[in-house]
Image 1 (cartoon, rainbow, N blue to C red):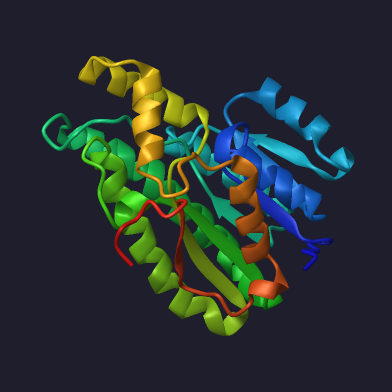
Image 2: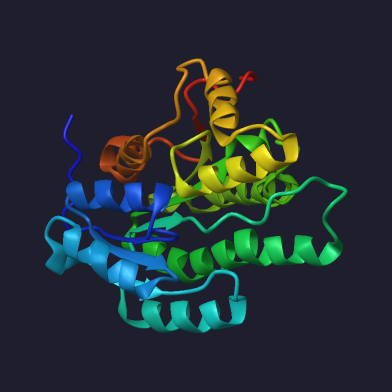
Length: 259
């Protein structure tokens, strides 16, 4: 099955590295024109030049943790740019359990993970409805089904994103716009390395021991590859997935024990 996204324009958050970059690369491979969003302009330039048909792609320098500044930039961008495929993805909030976070931490996580996503989507959805075609894909976490104690901010706010996405899918499905969330497991990314470094300090064991323990929890006994994540997003972005709507799809190598 060939995925052909020629003529489609994608906007991808957090795409200078990790899962976001894996998504951008695969969408570009499938023929979409992609706009990368992240904080590091030099890295964004470098990536655009490495993508297939690089002249079709662009980037937007944003900081999701500064909502007011982000709001201005995304409004300006969308005044003159079409988006057919929106991939809502941001950097993760700081790790920590429920006893280590104050109310300000929750507000910051809300602005980062929920407010920016909902606002961006609200600007794009009317045009998708008018065109009778659109794909909204939210990068979330397996922790919305089985909370990870050391990621209380992510657990809480990403659960809200999934519930909101389900509601939105009901409202826009009749217009040919699908809304789906991906529940992310353990992937070989910089984010995982950072979290494992913190774990190794708190548990007083080596980072390699933390990694091996993490892999042992996954039935496939390995971390996911970012390109594998990109394959799923490319499929969900295509006409082949037109009947998948309002779903929360795990990509975790079997990590989730619930069903």
